[in-house]
Image 1 (spheres, rainbow over the protein chains, first blue to last red):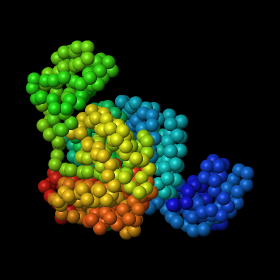
Image 2 (image 1 turned 120 degrees about the vertical axis):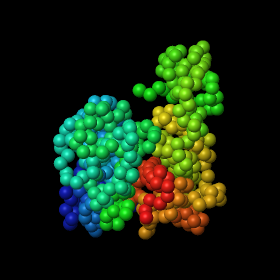
Image 3 (image 1 turned 30 degrees about the vertical axis):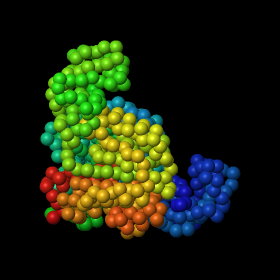
Length: 254
Length: 254
């Protein structure tokens, strides 16, 4: 079994540091760790290390760093998803799944047909879920869950050059995501921004604004997918294509 | 809004038929449908039709078929997943997601490290979930959830010729799923069988049995994915490659 992982923002590479109150409590009371046991610590920005518990007092666990395991994010692919949040527990499933898959950033989207408001409390809860997921799936850099924006704001704030911008809106004669990603100049697929609308879909007006700003519609096939299923499937496919393209140094299709 | 969908096994193409007791109750008491309203019916084998409610008596809703919408499964791709079921609600998420994505058949797998037993009750509950998902996502052919098998039984029962058999086991120098699917003769990717192990992974012995029988190991990247996340991501990627290959009539990569 791999050692348990703890989130320690800004931990020094040597000689070590201290778990915060919540992480210390988890280590002592739930996992019942003792002095000398191995743990892993990660800073949420790509740094992780093997460490050993050096001391335990009433409230805090201190550790010494043994070996740096990872110095930064694993690859150069950037995948940002702008998603109209689903209701209730499905928000948590969405965040958990996208974080495991390797999505860089999640931008909650307030749409005309949105069913859930991304309140400050909700965003905070989702960022806590990200931490849990990072501990489980051994991801060292946090997936950032941003404050919500409208489609208009999304169009205005997107200023990254040469980024592929796609919206999942499978109405009309729309190509499948995979074909769109494979049939363009492969060097482009390292920077992707994808938008997924609410259950009822984007309104015509929202689609018009996005398409007018250069976004391209993509489909995922004939079925109606739940928001979190669509977002996860899009992310899995896009990351597979991006990582493969990056590994091969360019184009996927000749 | 699309009309509500009802499952009617073996419905006649004309003139119409009757919803069973449970579907009738749902139509009358939950959706409060009336005579004359439009519905959709599907038979779970690929046939679907637009229909109109012709009569409602105490216990049953009868309908007349107006137009056949779909005559069979949407494409020739066959993706079967053999998965060690996760615990509790995550079983339901697994089935719901794989069904939406278009997986043909789900084969629960009893592994040495399995955490959940696929009892007859569990299988029945999962097949009920399939029905719910098919109604929601407009899928017309059911995803079959089979009775569980062991890895040994899986190896023995797999007799489909020329099918790609893959196991998610990302240890050692294992290629990513996407690269494996893209780098082989494209005509093969219409028939895929993929196995996903339990949380602790397949045992060495299970991997040996599968690899000895011609199965190929694939990876999904550096992170540790939950069973249902791994299965869904594998399915999304495999179906994207298969459908694209089928649409283009053969190879994806020259």
